[in-house]
Image (cartoon, rainbow, N blue to C red):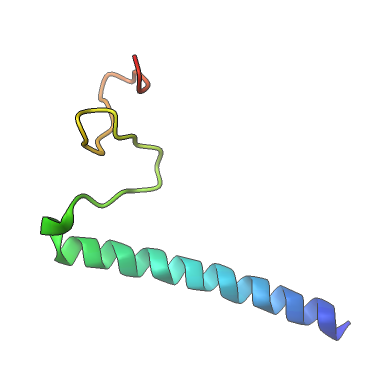
Length: 63
């Protein structure tokens, strides 16, 4: 039983650390815009001459 609880705790701590790293990365990107664009996790792509912007016409990359 202790192993199950320990495994659950470890998984929770890893996921919480992942969220913290994502927030730190976003804050760093805001403070240092000269280092490049912040790459969000919303599915944007970089098919437009190196930019990480989503196309406004709804077309997918490569078309």
